[in-house]
Length: 84
Image (cartoon, rainbow, N blue to C red; front, side, top):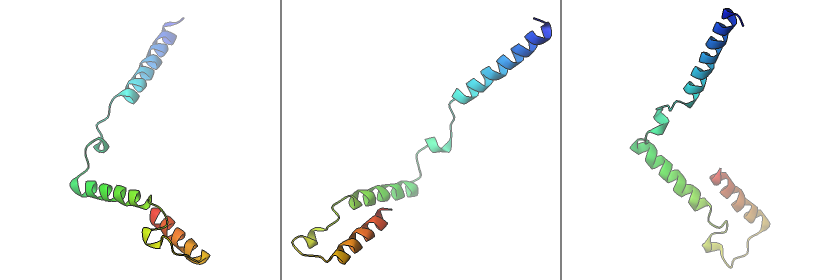
């Protein structure tokens, strides 16, 4: 091999090693820090709201009562809209 090819191979190898190290290097982004208090409260309320929506579609006040198909579909659609 000529010196030129050896030098080119060394440069390519060094660039490749630098790229691998840069990809593996830990980053200290803002996403790794804890959210501020306002964002934390919004996240907590979103989680509580989502968990509340996972409760039964038919609320307890409707137990034992007959609903028309239109009313049932209306209740389910409104629940799905709140869940989204």
